[in-house]
Image (cartoon, rainbow, N blue to C red; front, side):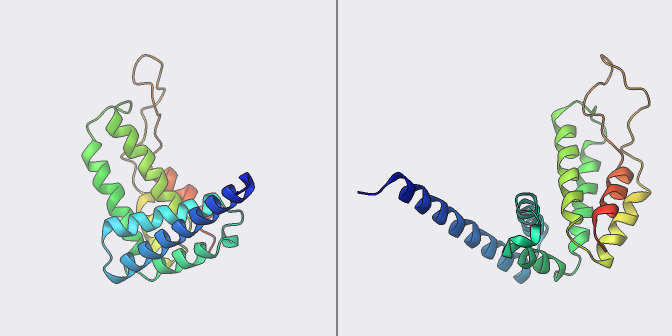
Length: 167
């Protein structure tokens, strides 16, 4: 009869094996025929590994995923295009609506992913966003008017990310 600890250990090990297979599959797919969805998914894996492992390099998959992304031509542009595509789609929405809140959440995640991709291409993309003031919130947002997520401009996200890229 298995003890509780044996069952928990088996569950934890099988979960780790499944995560590693997911990482391997995502790396292979993104490197063999990169497209936006695959690169963004791989970026999500990089972000997750970095977030839950301190330092990120303590997880062997961090460097594998990071190197895979950095080896893809146009790796940073995929994130730029995703931000700009969604920015255009929600430009007429108030800041408190679902699509706009989703956009703010997604672009924050994309900037976070870029902070783990130290490359000249990443710096160029972040430099591009330094001049992007489209999402600047209205001054003095007050409760009852357009109170909500109070989004920051892409220039803010870009500047913050540049301080964390680690070049």
